[in-house]
Length: 126
Image 1: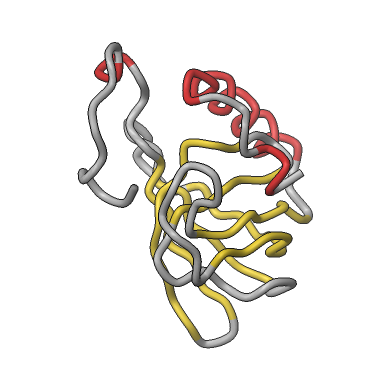
Image 2 (image 1 turned 180 degrees about the vertical axis):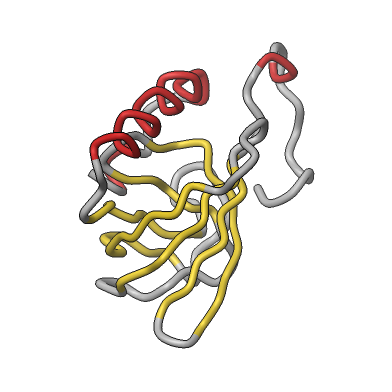
């Protein structure tokens, strides 16, 4: 589920590459990736997610963008111990807080491009 250790599916080469996410909470840092998100929040797949209700600062590195998108959010779902499977992915659901309108529009536009990955995880961050 992390990195390139997943099976390629037909048509996968047409999908956008995952957004690389770096995050900070308290004095800790983490990294992950995301393909499930919208202007409300995102599911960050990572090995060591932040705890529930943690406030996180995130840098979203989308392929093709020169600069990262900086956002803040609150962890509303976390799975630090579970299996790395499609039912309960290891990572965290983050609901964005205090997004400005241009950033919200940009994330909504990117979210539409990434909908090819499905919407089954929206309940983890909305």
